[in-house]
Image 1 (tube, rainbow, N blue to C red):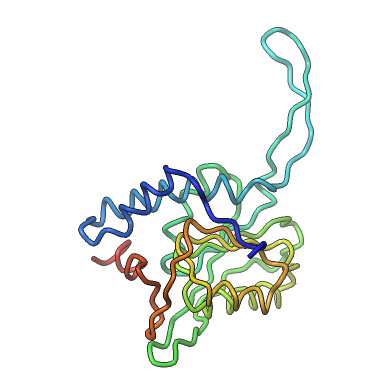
Image 2 (tube, rainbow, N blue to C red; image 1 turned 180 degrees about the vertical axis):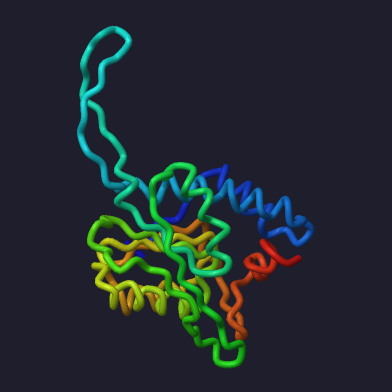
Length: 212
C-alpha cells in the first residue's frame, strides 16, 4: 500500500503498548495518545508548506532559512475520538486552523451519519488538510468526512488522514474512493470484527479518552 505510511519507531511502539493495555487508566491512555500524536504529527508534516526567509545570527551573519506556514494547514478531527490528537498537532502547528466533523455510527448497519460540520466557508487558503481519527476501522466515518471535504472544494491530493490504528478494510475503502488521499498510521492491525472493531486494537478510543 504505497499510499500508507506506517510509523516504525520504538517510541511509537512504547505508546502503542500503553494504549492497547486494558489496565491503562484514563490518564495513562490520554498521555500515551498525546505522545503518539506527537510522533504522528512529525511524520504527517514532512510535506508541510514552507517559505524561504532570511535571519541574522548572533554572529551577525545573514542566512537563508525555511519558515513553516502552519497557517496554511487545516486540521479536521472526526468527533469525538479525533479530538484526542488535536493538541499533539497544535504543539507543532500553533497557527493551524481546526474544523470539526462529527460522525455517529449506526451500530447495526455500521453506517456513518454526519451531525457536525464546522468547515469554514472559504477553504482556498489551505494547502494541506489533515483528518484526525485514532481508529480507521470500516472506514465509513472517514470516507464520509472525505466526501464532506471534497464537496466543500478541497482537492483530494491536499488531504492526509492520520490515525493510530488501521485495518486493511478501512484503508482499501479510502483508496478505492479517494486514491489521491494519503494515510499515516502507527500500526495496521489484522482483524476487523463483525461489529466494526479493530482487533487486537485498543477498544473504543473515544470511550477510553473521555468516559471510562
